[in-house]
Length: 320
Length: 278
Picture 1 (spheres, chains in turn green, brown):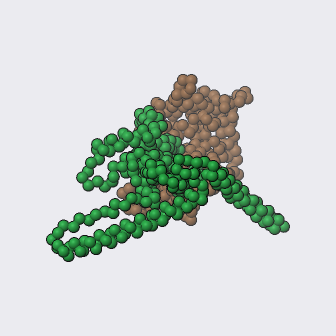
Picture 2 (picture 1 turned 90 degrees about the horizontal axis):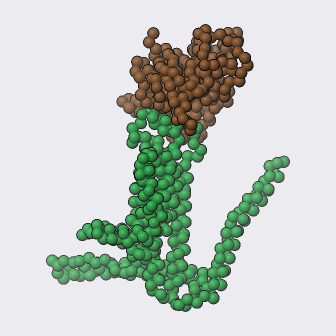
Picture 3 (picture 1 turned 180 degrees about the vertical axis):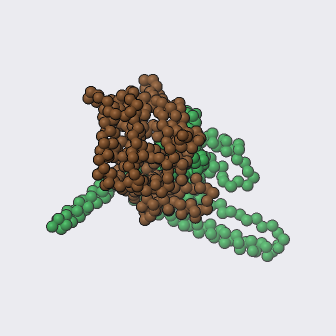
C-alpha cells in the first residue's frame, strides 16, 4: 500500500526538517551565549567587567522596574496637581492656575515609542516623496535622466553628513510659537527621510519602467487619461516593486535613526545609548546591550511586517 | 465602391542595427463592412505589424488607414483588439477587466447598464459562472474568452485579432473559433485577423489575404472563401472545394510567397522547388 508506506516516510522527513531548521539556529545561539559568557569573565573595562548574558537579562528587569516606578511617580504627580489646583481655587477663586507638565526623564520603554514615531514619520515623508517621483521617473526617460545624477550623488551620503545641514535648516525655518514637534524630532525624522527615500525611488522607477507593454497597450486602446492610467494600470502593476523599495527604505531608516537620534538628542533609543555611554555607571554596558538587542528585534519585526505586506500585493504569476 | 476599411500603401520602416529596415512596403487592401478578413503569411513576415498599425499601436511610416471615412490617428476603443496573449490585468477579476473598458467608453450610461453590458458579453463567451475570478485562476482558453468579451463589449467599429488562438490547444481553439464566429455574426462586425493556421483562415474568413515574405512584405494573393454561412466545420471538411482552397493557400506559403511579383490571375506558376526565405 503506497499510502501506509509513504506516511511514516513523510513524517520522518518533516521531523528531520524541523530538527534541522530549529536545532541548528538553537545550537548557534547557545554557542554564541557561551562564548559571550567566557568573554564577559575575562574582559575588564574601565567601569567593571563586561556584562554577560545573565547581567543583560537582569538589566531588562531593572529597566522595566524603573519604567513602572516612573509611571507611578508621574501619575502621583498629576493626582497631586489636581488636589493642589482644587485647594488653590478654594483659597482664591479668581486666581490664575497654571498647569504644569511632569518633568521626569523618559524611560527606556518611552524612548522605544519615540523612536518608532520618529522612524515612521521619516518613512512616511520619504514615501510621499519617493513614490510619486519614482513613478514620474519610470514613465519619462527624460526626467529619469534628469534625476539620475542627483540620485547617484546623494544615495551614498551618510546620515551623519546630512544631520548638521538638516539641523541648521530646521533651526532657521521651523520656529513656530507653539510647536507641534520638538526640533530634535523633526531633524531626526527628516534625516531618516533623506537617507531612506532612495531605495523606494529607485525601485519604483524600475518597476514602472519595466511594466509589461501589453498593459500599457490596454491603456492606449482605451484612451485612458494620465491619472486613470497611473491609478488603474501603472500603480497596481508596479506595486510589488514599490513594496520591495519600501521594505528596503524602512530598514535603512531604522538604521539611520539611531545615529540621527544620538546627534540630534531626540529622546529615542539613540539618545538612550548616548546617555548611557556618557553616564559611565556600572550598568552602562548592560543597558547599551539591552538597547542593541531591542534595536535588532524591532528592525527584524519591521522587516517581517513589510515582507508580508509585499507578499500581499504580489499577484502570483502575471496572467498572459 | 467606397470601402469601410481602407489600408492605403502602408509602409513600416524600423531602425535596425545596420540601417533602416522596411518590414512592410505599400500594403494595400480594401475591406467591406461586415467582412471577415484573414491575413496569413510566414512568421516574421510583418502581418502583425500591419495589424498593429491599423490598431494604432505601431506608428505608420508612410501611407494611411481609413476607417468608415476617417483616417485613424493613434489607438482608440473604436477598434477592439484581441491580442495573442489576452493581456488581462492580473490584479482585476475577469468582470473588472471588461468593466475597465466599458466604464471608459460608455461613461454616460448608468452604472447598472454598464454592469449589465459586461455581464452580457461575459455570459455570451461562456463565462457566466467564472466572471468574478482573477486571471490567475482561469485557464488559458478562459482568459482568451475574457479578451474576446472585452473587445466586443466596447461595441467597436471593427475587430482586430492578432493570432488570438495561437497559444491554445486545438480542441480549445475549435471551441473559441465557434464562440468568435457566433459573436461576429450576432454583432455584424468587420474583422481583420492575423493567423498562420490555414484551416482557421478557411473556417472563419470571407477572404484570405496572403502576404509575401518580408522584408518589404506586401499583399501577395487574395482568395475568396465562398462557403455559405453559418458555417459548419464538419460540412466544410466534406466539401471537395475546401481542399482545393487549402491546397492553394499552402501552395502559396510553400512556393510562391517569396516571389516579388504575381500574375494577375492566381494560378500556380511552375516554380522550381525553392525553400522560402525564413
